[in-house]
Image (cartoon, rainbow, N blue to C red; front, side):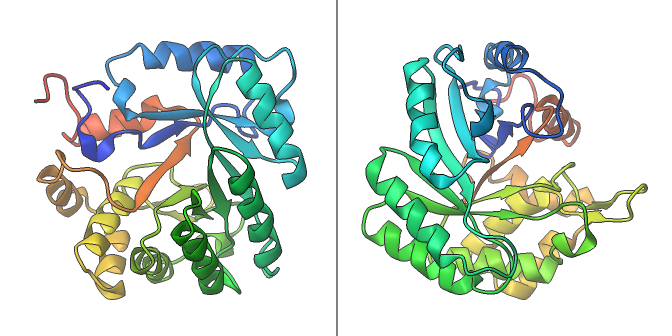
Length: 280
């Protein structure tokens, strides 16, 4: 791991350059990801995210670490995993949705639990932030207690305002995961380090540094109101100061997110003084 990336940010950013609506081809994305892994900031990177629908027998991912995004039926995921492994890729994890908003997440969770049982894999279950959420987290916690590598993933953005949870709503989810000792991933909406409003859409996006800091706050015993205050912050100074003294520690709770261009979050962290050349 690059010594220039402190442990607090290790593996924070997955390479989402192949996720829709990206026009990037598989060969180009693989080559670029390989180039990034040879760079000084390699320690910041998680795996290359590969949609299952793009995986064919001719895939050449070398020995890159990849993660499978299940945009096909859960029953088709094991075949896609085997194709990736046959191509020499190191499959770090699988992530797949368990239900649409308003649907019961339990049947989908059962399917992903079965996948975790059959495969030597970490499986992220994408759970809607709607009805059935807390019961779903209980189910995930029970699976982990039984030794399965199952964890939740949540979407915190999209094409409609209701897909962006408020700071209080997201804080409640972070604390619920903390209480159940569940690491979690996030997807969608995390475009910048600090919470901000998109001038084109008017949607207010969560900042990935807000979430990192919220994970620290929750881990330290913060309640929903305290964690929500961190998530709502729009000035970088309190977030940077909260993270600066924890850079040598592992990141609690929040395992990471995907970025279409992994250089963008890197650039923001460098500008904020949290990652820089010569870090010791």
